[in-house]
Length: 188
Length: 188
Image 1 (cartoon, rainbow over the protein chains, first blue to last red):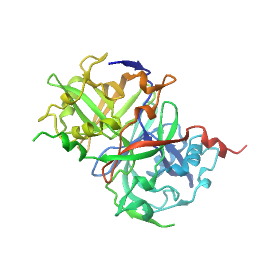
Image 2 (cartoon, one colour; image 1 turned 180 degrees about the vertical axis):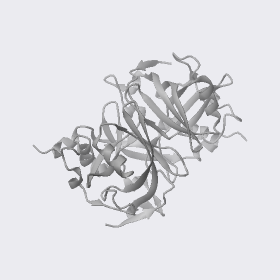
Image 3 (tube, one colour; image 1 turned 60 degrees about the horizontal axis):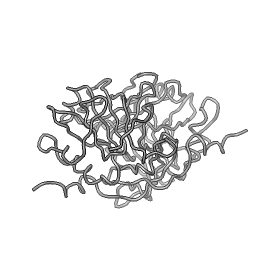
Image 4 (cartoon, rainbow over the protein chains, first blue to last red; image 1 turned 45 degrees about the vertical axis):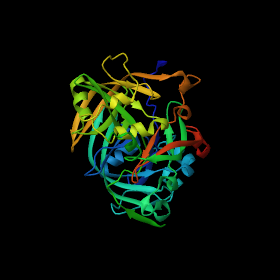
């Protein structure tokens, strides 16, 4: 075995890139986020870690609701731009076709293949971050992203991110079905 | 616009698949986990959501330390198997070459391109889940996964998972550099 220690300040796994939307002083704003995971089944709660100084945090705290918009590879440039500038200085919403859904004042991005409306379940302040627990209330997509009624990642073509190195990736080949291919190792 | 509502019980983004390792009653055990994100910069804390009834939870609680092993596409079958059977009934560690690092009784998997030793920073019980905050203490890899000294996802070839549909994926093309390609949209 030839294992070596590498630096520990990193999070070297692939992450989907999402744009988090909220109204701030009546204006839609979006920021990009990669520190995201699902946390629970029912209710369906997702956790996001956002820097406490981010402009979007105030919108989420004030309105107790926000959106998560899953970015596609086609949107890589616009998505990256959202991570380079602050909504305090620039109107990022003008980059996108913004729409609103059932929760009304939660801005979402039409170009994103999946849009999720969340209410705030809980916010935990943690080491300079706001860890936001959002409960999924509505989930929007388009017929063109479905196969047999189910969201199809090959059609969605999500934008992925990795660090260290700060690279964006597309998904590649489907390599098998989960809860299935491992059955071949089960002993009788 | 042709947005439609789809079911809200899902988490339709791509997730990396990791094998979480812990000692349980002196034996190494591994479970697969996809609900994972980084949470903070310094200290470097990652959050995992694991079902409270999982065998591995006891090992993490008892030892206050555990490993996160990033699975590669080559390991898809073995990784899937780890999600199909419980360590209560099967010795999953015998599938792998297990090694130990600086924290000593934290089992890790040689075949995984990246191995992370964590100590438990905090555990939060939340709606039937254990949300485990792990602090990264040591991070191991091999020279063959580095390019110019930096971990290279193209060499790591990580196993990715999507639901709904329960599919595994490889990464595909690199589509740009983060904090870079969006600069073209900046106004002078």
